[in-house]
Image (cartoon, rainbow, N blue to C red):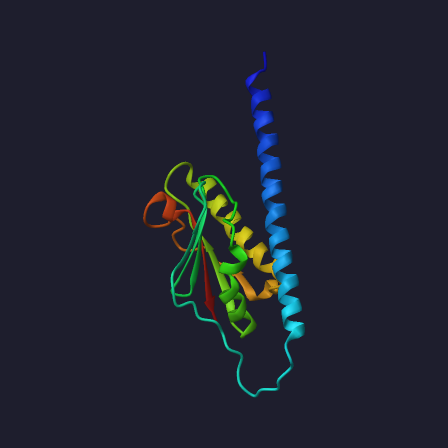
Length: 177
C-alpha cells in the first residue's frame, strides 16, 4: 500500500510535468509569433518619416478565459492577468494581450507591473505568490524582447485585490512615463 507521501510525490511529479509542457507550449507560441513578426518587418519597405512612432491604443475590452480560472482582460489600456488559486500560470494569449504594452515601450514609455492577491489563506504566502505572478508577467515581456530596464515591478500599497477572489488574484500592467 502506498503511503500518503508517495501519493504527494506522484502528484508533484505529474504537476511538474504538466507545468513544463504548458511552459514549453507558451514559449513555442511566443517564438513562432516573434519569428513571424520578424519576417513581416523584413518584407515591408523602409520609409523615412519625421513623425513620432504610433502607439497602439486598445479601444475595446478583450477577454480570454480558460477553464481553470486563469484569464486575461485588456481594458482602458490596462492588461490584467487573472490567476487560478495558488497558481502562477498565465492564460494563453499573453503575448497578444501585451502587444499594446510592447508598442508603448517602443514609443518611449515604461511598463509598471503590480501583483495582487485574494484574502483567503496566509497573507505572507499570498504576497509572495502575487510577487511571483508579477515576475512571471515580467519574464514574458523580457522573453518578447522588452529591455528589463523598461519594466518596473511595483508593489502596491495594498496587495489585497478588490472584487471577488477570482478578480483579486491578478497582475496589472500599465504604461507610465
